[in-house]
Image (cartoon, rainbow, N blue to C red; front, top):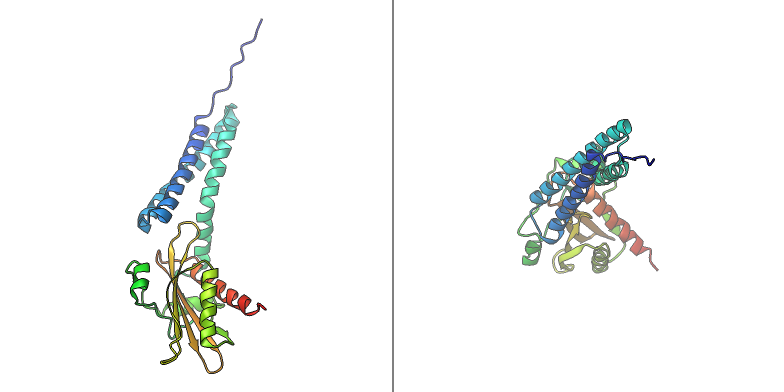
Length: 259
């Protein structure tokens, strides 16, 4: 006599955990695509991304519920629940990382190497167009103490080069870093010998813009390079602007050591 073998039913929570996690991933991808290719307002993009994170968290809860049910009843779906859990954790990892940074870094989105006279952003038509008509706010002196405490390594860059050479070096480094140069002025030897470069750096995921002003100014026996980096989106840059300055300074030093 043949025995009837009845398969254990599939956990509905496991199924929905997998489906919800996949939909969360698709929503996050849409948010990134809208930011990078549709030039959508940052608020709308972050709203879509926040919805994706909410779905990822829901998928994680469903995966946990499925795990309990599978453990108690022996239902199928452990693989689906594990997939939903892992995908959700992957989506939530980066926001969790940023939240950790926010706890230890000050809420500033504007960093400069010169507190007394931060490099000015250019007022040319090309620069204004690149900033979409936006003018970075005036430097807030109240942020000086916060920056000094959090980013003591952000300092002016002194090079043993003539202003014209330092200007060309700054241009080359800016391009090598992958920043988009929107306008520049070579050293004005008739007035004060100061040169200006304005560039835009993009965040890795969403491509949000940070505006960067670079000033090259001659001193008695050296040339000084100052930077100011300002985020367009949000009041907390999670250390991005200080990293821009650090990367630029490191690239300058590497270039100076080249044979």
